[in-house]
Amino acid sequence: MNWYVVRAVSGQENKVKNYIESEIARFGLQDFVKQILVPTEKVVQIRNGKKINKEKVYFPGYVMVQANLAGEVPHIIKSINGVIGFLGEVKGGDPVPLRQAEVNRMLGKVDELSVENENVAIPFMVGESVKVVDGPFNGFNGIIEKINEEKRKLEVMVKIFGRKTPLELSYMQVEKV
Image (cartoon, rainbow, N blue to C red; front, side, top):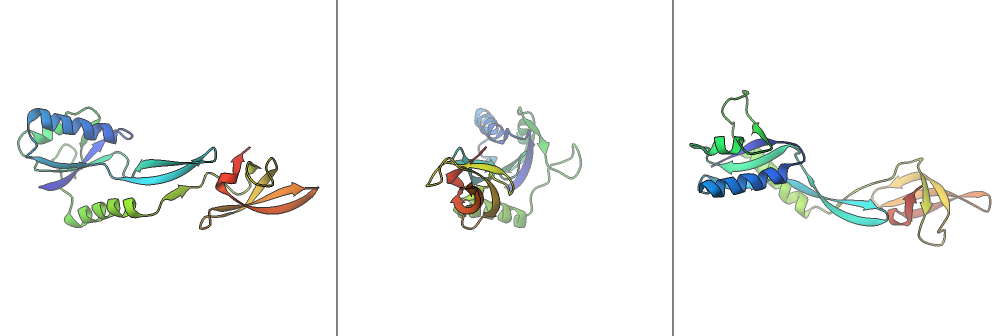
């Protein structure tokens, strides 16, 4: 069995995966399709001061299928709603299997991403106005001067008693104005 890449409508990768699984089961072709994979990574976003864990598709628009493309299997997969076709060299030509090195890298990346510590998408930019919502300076407005990704801290310049004062705050202590 080889790994193939199925091109799907972007944003509908999981739907396509479920459709393929149900169609393969409906036709009783489980012997020909071993595994269907949508590579994802865990991303932590901060919204309204709360951490939100999200799964982000690593290769948008692509679904990996480990299959033996014999007989009707490629036609069944191509006819599924949301499937554009197989990734191949020639348009309308035979599907080209992934090389073993690519498969190992892809599967290794998926394993690595599930173990890797959470990537936090930083919702702030230098020069942006923010309001302090936590701590002793709650209610003060300021402007972001620096972003320290390692510490997950922001340096915010706040006017206190008519004087600009730098504060080091975490992402959770501020919100956009």
